[in-house]
Image (cartoon, rainbow over all chains, first blue to last red; front, side, top):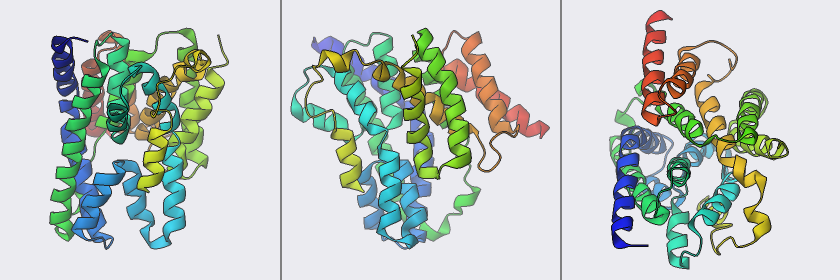
Length: 224
Length: 92
């Protein structure tokens, strides 16, 4: 891999991820504020973002913190299940990358950077490690800084008034549109719509995404 | 929480995936599509009224139209979806 490829891929990683920074920042501020309102100290809120790096799991924690450790861990497990196939796909894409690099890429294995990296791989990005590193740096720094901002605002922020909007689902729709190619993938996309609708209706929030995505992929992969 | 999340992220990342069986796994071929579609649908579906026509659902329809019109461009999907959402907000 040449240095030119690496630097060009890094730049493209930054370019593709920067539009996601504002909605991530809003989400981070809301998490920081909710964490303070739920009784965490600003340091604990920051530590949570630093170590867990999962908006959905952290939001679930804030909502369930009064119920004790069991429900929080159960919700985290449900949300984390999708990381298994995500890490397998990413591991296949990055090939013989050294262990330390693999650890670094795992730390920020989140839906957004994973999606952008799969999309980059589909269009033939020469250096996926540099691409994802840039994406991770952008998302992680935004997440940490916005958590601190939200934690400092704390009780002053009316989180109900903040509209997270529809940016994230539209981004994921765009990612799906860019990677779906084969007949099996189209069938899986259709199955995923059905599975997601059923999951939203019958499953607890923390299990909806992992449950629907894994079920749809398991059934869809049987079609040729 | 950090241990559960990191363990799941590290599960297949500690070593390169070399097994041909795993590489040929059709599940991994279709999983990204399933995940992205699920994340989109869950995001568009309002809690408690999953089959209702709301501005978020119309944004999803706008996004699909954007994908068709702009050759699957991410910008086209987000822009058309956002326009559809804003128009629907005016209507509802």
